[in-house]
Image 1 (cartoon, rainbow, N blue to C red):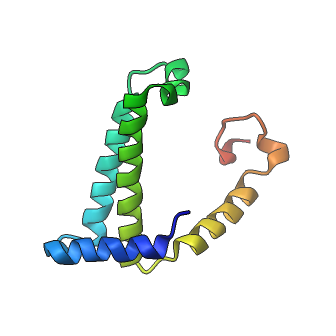
Image 2: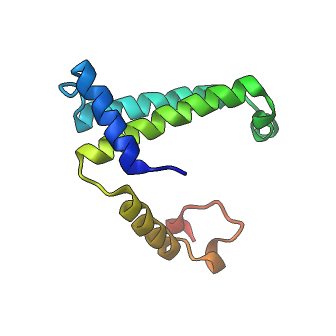
Length: 117
């Protein structure tokens, strides 16, 4: 089970020991997060839809994807910590917002943005 508070503590200690807090500000962490997201995208960039749906069967692709997702999560947790954002509350609130923006009876099976229906 994922323990966000435990991960926040580990990441803070990791940063403290390396004297990296001077580099960990919201702007830098957001940029690092974008970079890691790009690395995740790169894994799938030239795959067909079919190949990407089956990528989990390839151990090398699965491992690379796992590493990039972990990097993204670590930067997200660090950024949320610095911004004093409770991730559990933020996720719960965003799910509620999305339920209102995307009513199932209007968007079921439709990929259009909520402003287009």
